Image (cartoon, rainbow, N blue to C red; front, side, top):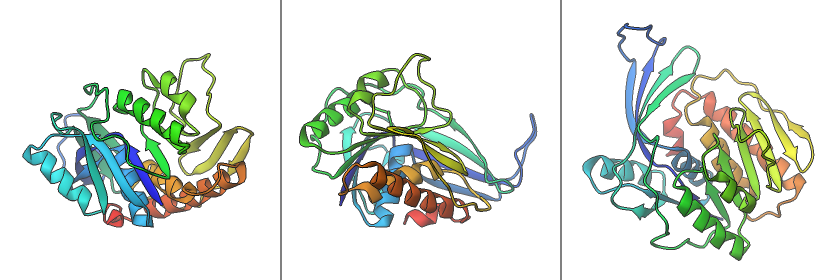
Length: 271
């Protein structure tokens, strides 16, 4: 199966610490990792690890930090297509607690340039996965995918201005529990699911259902939601979008994400 993910690609500076430093306190990291990141990129890598042929469409330039990120991404067998070659790679500084597995993120991608067209079109695919970044291009890709009859999945981590134009084309919206749209907004997607960390996955449309998630001792939650979305895309690709198939794919994605959280070498699992 072929999956195309369109969205954010970042350079992650990951610092693992025993406990978070207090205000004005200095601490020494147990480990420092430079790696690619971003919701769409992590999801694409997860789908590739599970066996899908995967392409990431994103916007970064050819400066040395961006070349490093593209080299790291290529090690996961994800093909890369440039949306633009003028955007410096966004940087995310991530502090991961070794004790709890929780993470804190400081990023530089609050406002990204708008790209109004897909320079290379949309490659043929069985699933299109969007993370809500590069929204104008995401809307263009979704329009093409909809005309082709390709299922469209949204990783809804947070509400972004303009999502109301994209959402009517989305077939499956997987939202975090922190996702909050306008108070009177009604999700127009055929399927809507909400993740709650290690608690049950909640399907809220077309009908209310709950899916249990394997309970594990989480040692790292960094990118777990992205892995979930990539795994869902992998398991739903090629199958009809029925409630039973969506529920099955969500359940299997939950198993993959839980296993990911229980392994301290999480980044290595994506290679």
